[in-house]
Length: 200
Image 1 (cartoon, rainbow, N blue to C red):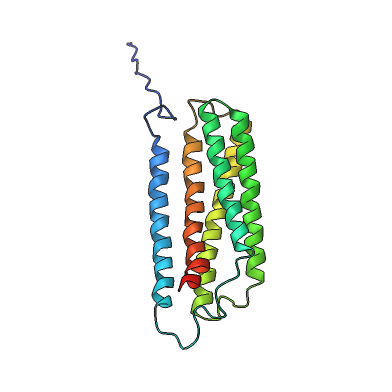
Image 2: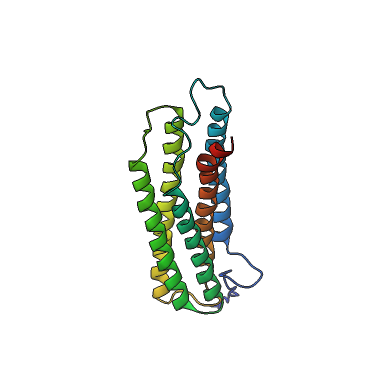
């Protein structure tokens, strides 16, 4: 009987100059989701430029007293995630775990404030085109935030268990890519619903 020896090739788990397969898969997922958001936002702009018998949006631009601080909270969470990812590249797993937990808390605050804002709206999903588009697009974004929160929590747990180091951290790069996407999409949503009605 002869022994067969197979060459062991290390998996691409964050080595310098290489991207893991999962990272590329996430990139394609992000691109697909970005296209969906682009279509949804296009729907808003299509209706916004049509002639209206009443002011658009109905009741004037949405209030920014909750939306603006909430936007800052979400952007801060993205900064914290970036800080944690830079830490694990230097082998600082505790810094990563802390950053992911902080980002999770900030993301949860964003969700809570968004629900609070929804409850104070003078329009509803069925009150017209604007209400339907507003709740569909912001609700679709909230679904992505919810998925992102689960991703952050799982990564934080894995990090606390010592699953990552300076070489093995491909899952972090993949998960943080999704979270940054969620934040960038919110900027587009925020600009669409809160800024464009104010600039005509």
